[in-house]
Image (tube, rainbow, N blue to C red):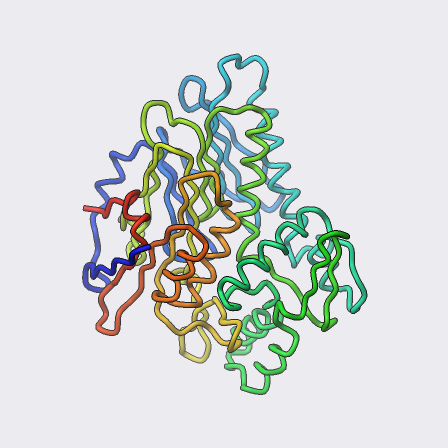
Length: 387
């Protein structure tokens, strides 16, 4: 793949959002966990339901003949939306029943990978202070195997065993004390995917260090989108868009127009940086640090941590978009790769995308305060810069 690096507008300069009006898919993603949020634009636009203290019920409605939309807040109030086209024989599928199944599937995946839910499989693994083999579910094995692939391909930049480091820095925000070298070394002693053995044939794992604890936040949302997409295909849904935060997947035809996904400007909530589109199935993932920096003792730190150092990443990556327009890639792969590229930086990130056979756009702040972007040659075929 050929890398192209382009300097864009001066740092902080606003861009107009007029292009939003002509995009056929209206969907605004308020990304709680990253920068460079994607917006998927659909034919109609309604605000997402307000989150409530009790478990929220989903909203669903018909948006145009044959098309239905269902929305909800899930996974700590992350906005999610699914738009699907019913088969020609609509009587075979009740859209409300299908919507319930969609949110049940999202919940099922969340119940596996949420490390803060004491009843989740991840939490149970983290509590199991043993070096003995531990059986894991089919879904957990699948994510662990993909995590291993990404860990090897990225030379350790993607690592789902960083929970001790993450919690140390979150505690530092509360105490307003930057972690000492000794504290970082202590947390890192129990991190590292090389300490995890996967026994695929028996669907088991063994930890060489019983203090290893997992956090799949860099891959689980993409995996959830994959599973909901599979559910829709099982019901023979001809076309759909599935969006969870910065994870978006489409398949089938958007009537007579291509699927178009707006990339939000990393520094201006009211503007677009560009648009990606495709007549084929398209998977898109984003990662970054624009909205969730850590503030400790008057200093700002990235919320994504380098598995090699145990410290926040240092390169000023504003956003990473990974993309694939065929069925060969999963959103879980794109999700994890976007996280890894945020750690590796621009140059190595392009090489990583090339090794994995996917496309990427990387936006960062230069030393002079300008915004720079670099992309693979294949990404450019789907990309239109905002005017």
